[in-house]
Length: 72
Image: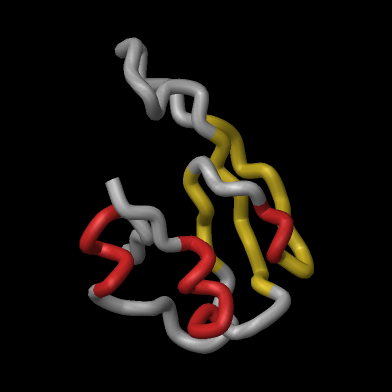
């Protein structure tokens, strides 16, 4: 699991250009994407209804990662 949220974005970058499941991100940087569904937690919180998308990135993750990091 990789995350651009807070300090996790500084830990590791996904390898190469491997496909990934995006949680709540816009798949604009994917050369191919497919909707997988959405999160249904049965609890009202920020993640409820968040989109899950399978993404094959246009460029290696190392090039995209700086734009995906978002502190707090």
